[in-house]
Image (cartoon, rainbow, N blue to C red; front, side, top):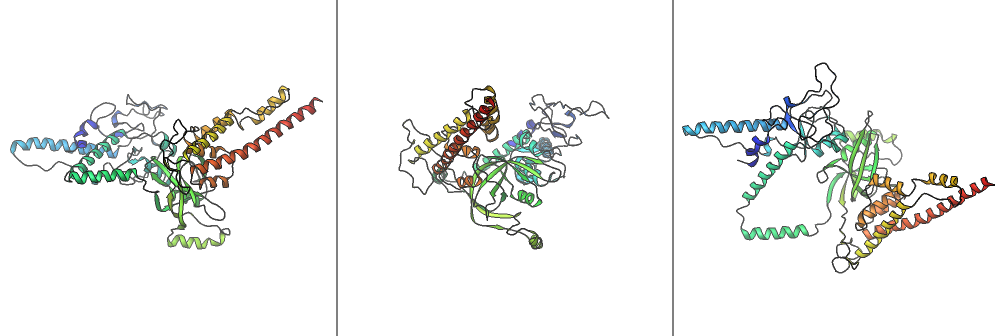
Length: 517
């Protein structure tokens, strides 16, 4: 019998009373209790529900709990099936004890496999990853319920309402009982795989393991996706950049739903996004992760996203439509602006642009490994001689950002206190500690100079440059070239800021001098 089946009795215990689960209900804190252990929402019938729910689980650390619109608790269907399976195993054990005395044979023990659908997601029909149980009692993978919320608004099984996207993203807890059951199930699967491969000879095993080790350490080339749905934005989004994107039109909303996909690496929803260039769509884009969603009654959305990694479009954009969609396009052709294009169903083959690691500098300022320098056509790789220049440029950019963070508001040379106060108040927040604190609150903390890639993207996000300049940085492959481009922006902006600062100081001084006369 598998480890999971042996552990069902001890696992299926109420988190509140400690007894065997009966009519299991999974609360929003992730604990599963008997339905009778859930305290009533109001002390008496026909009384307004209490605003504070007291969780029956003593070890619960959640500050708040979320219930459905009618505050009704529903049975957790997946846990209920596990309870039924445990009951069947116990009944079989009792029958085996009785039949052993009579010498009768019994059927083989039950098995829990993927065909039993107990530990499968309600949406993707695969073994759940980070399982979450909704108010209606149906369980999903975390990323699957996020995608369901954007596409359907309700449960795919019962059409019951789902919590807000931001709650699912930030506060909803993982079903602890199902997570333990899935871990034991995967342990059983690994044991079965090991037993099935035990017949392989030692020589074959050693050769295969060495070859797999070699293949894992070697560079396998960039990751590619074919016919990937594309989302078109009006702005250039860089890696690590936080952006709020409005999705207002029906066409744009359809494109968002089509392009959203589940990424189990970050346990969230991601989109392959490009911006609309002139006259065509750009060839470089960014994989963005959805951080939060604000939904409005008119079906419009505002999504908060953060850039993750770059990609390049291979070949041409294409769109896949059915005959009905093609007929609709032909009918609306005259209503579109010249050169406009319906891109609600846009697809492209994309290739992820790899970010090669940079080795930290040694005490002598050189790379940790000594080797020949990489050719200019290839990205900077570990051990290349350009590592020292990359770290040197990163330190310069980092030092300048920190200088901006310490820059006080403009000070007038006039001795009058009113002039100083007026100019300081007018320029407060443009640069200096307040500006730096605001930028870190939006885009995260400034990476240290030892992380040149992070410093490059962070500086590019906060500097006031145009979208065309940001796109030029996005399509620049080499880290050393990207840092050089950011440094050129800094030199240009620094010269402009110095002229503007001096002009402002002179203007204020002149005004107060005239008032003094």
